Length: 404
Ligand code: W6P
Image 1 (tube, rainbow, N blue to C red):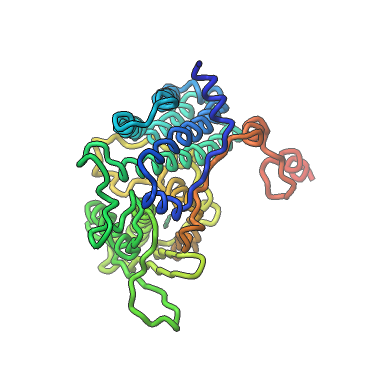
Image 2: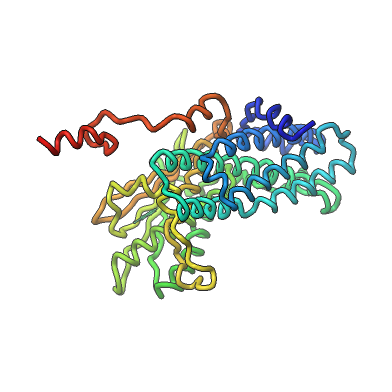
């Protein structure tokens, strides 16, 4: 069986999205054997789906050394999981599987930076037209989302069934010692705690660079009928939430510090936390002068933010690094379990960033890219010409009005 044949085979299946609730049920009830049998099919399906899409990238991007490297990692990982296709799940195989997953996860740890490097290589060697830029945006959103999901599956298996630690399950102990974690899901995730944690770490960088930083005010919105002083706990992956908030805090702090210059007091950042029936919302507000409405959308564009990075040796000059891939990837983390990240700015005043999460764990389903005919059509179709007067693609119209 050639690898190309296996890729064709597994890419015919759609990935099976799991909800947070399913992850938890699985973590509480499923045996290692069951997890193994699920993953040896689901991982190749998710890998093959996205590998088919890599193959559709613009040719000149596919030829960039960094993109070739990333593609090789995927090939190798796919092949390694194929080795388990027909294996009988005895203890030795299960342990070997776990070790292979750790290997695969580590192999792919620098994928985001390496793909960004590939886009840079393309920019430096070619003129990137509108359509290519559009394809790359579309691809990277899907590619990074696929990666988030694959890492989630791998992490759950590794955490639930650690191969070498005490030969088995440490998380699944019943009774009072039972952890509130199921894999990387915290069943009582203290939202305000994660907010303060992300704030403190961003503040550390801010203080280093600006020698000052804004304060934080956390405001827990409460329904008047529920006067209880309870913390807001949710079922979520704290590392994902932390990633999003750390990124937002860095952006807000930089805006506040740059906008106000040297003053004694900086306006604080405020985070409002609200828990409704359907959504949990975190609204982070800064008074950092805002950004023009016309640039809001650009902040989520990979090509817009792909500027050559300052070398790592002068790290102290980029503590609150620019809009790298931070915002687009944070939005993917929010969307991964059907939440969202929205920016609303008032130029001349400040910016609100709202993070939405699903309040119900059975509605927090993975949002996954699937590869099908529509996908391949997307990469071949040229960008539609707009039919509103404001669209720059209407070259003919514009010339007409200039002449009049
Ligand atoms: C700004 C720009 C920005 C991006 C993301 C989050 C907060 C902020 N504030 O001025």
